[in-house]
Image 1 (cartoon, helix red, strand yellow):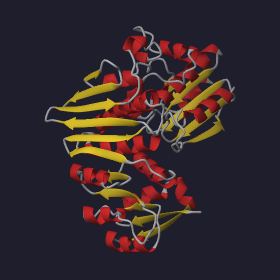
Image 2: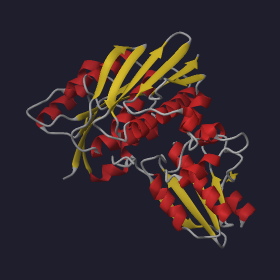
Image 3: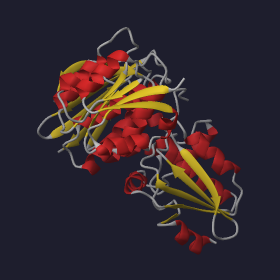
Image 4: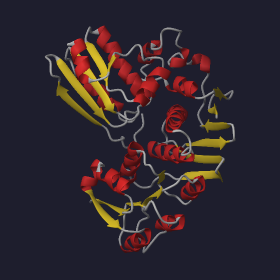
Length: 118
Length: 276
């Protein structure tokens, strides 16, 4: 693992508007240098529904994408629900190129994810 | 001790971007109306980072790189109004920390300014082995800051391309360079990666070489390129079993973006081609 300074990233954790929903808002590029913070959050969270807002993630790399798919695998295994929302076009392109667009549960917004999952 | 940044105040866009950088809260920011006025300030005080004006000549901007009055050399981020590959190569060769042409890509800009402020000395140099605008060779240490700086310089050489294409090309280059830094060099700053970027009328070519042992594509069960059709995340299980960090999509994504991608026999040198 790299030991250089981590790129700036902010993770905001807040309850959703419905019971059992946690909204995780990630701000900043999500990369090999900082995805462990994100991974820690997602692993510690035990709420029935986790909504990950990536609207302010301008780009992510392969390591971060793998981490996001780890959330998908973990939620399936533990019968929890999750959604990735507010996907910028650049991330959509990456998901498509990696062939995982259909695997990830995505919605345009937090509100739509809550309506569908809660 | 607070960091000191010198900003030549000739662009409201730059001022707005700088103001949004969280680290600015702990930073002393001095402003000046022109490169020449700023140069005088830089000779009287030591600045960690200098953001040049968008306007003015390249010589004015690069003059901040000259040692002055025994102060520690500043990290100079050169700003320009129009794409100019020749100016970018001059900036690299003279040791500029980074280079940006308007309109500024906010994320990259803010990240590079943050890195310039926070990276401890010494900043690993980027060697420019060929400086022809259509044939660039950069050699740099296998560490994060050097890699991000190289990617930004490379982005500037693509400033005339459509933004979506440029973003995709940078995404592919980022993945291949990260593979070289991580798997080829173990992020050891004493090891060096070489990037060749060549451009003809019809194609863009990138060659990435690392000093590592290389790899055999058929042994890459931990990478997404080895997944069977219809199961794009099979390799994640392999990675977990092998105790590897999440990921493994880099080569696949780069292959999708480029028109051709191949490796040398040893597997420590990648050639990426995009037709225009």
